[in-house]
Image (cartoon, rainbow, N blue to C red; front, side, top):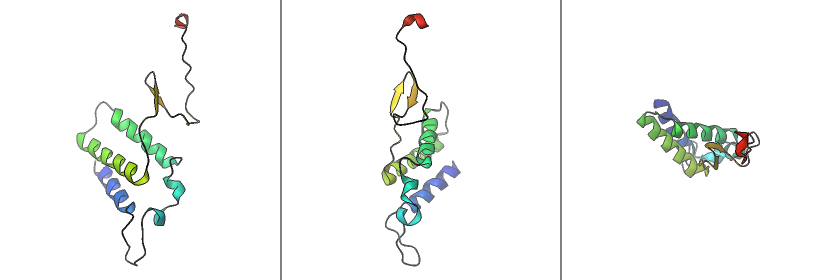
Length: 114
C-alpha cells in the first residue's frame, strides 16, 4: 500500500502542468518525457491497464490498496487521457479490438462439437 501511495504522489507531482522548478523554468509532462511514453500505444499504458484489471477483478484485495489503485487509475485517466475500461468481453474473456497479440476466439454454434 505504501508503494502505491508513493507512485501516486510522484506521478501527481510530475504530471502537474503549472508548477515551476527552482530555476524558474516551467516543468510538467512535456518537460519530463517524450510524448510517445504517454500515448495509448506505449508499453506503460498496457502494463497499467493489465494491472488495474487484475486489481479490480481479484477476489480479495486490501481495501486501502484498492483505494490507492483507484486514485492512481483516476489520476492517469484525468491527466493523460488514458482509458482503462475493458473494451470487449466474449464468454468471460476480455480482449482489445486492436490488440495484435490477443488470442483468436472462434465461437462454435454447432452443439455437436461439445
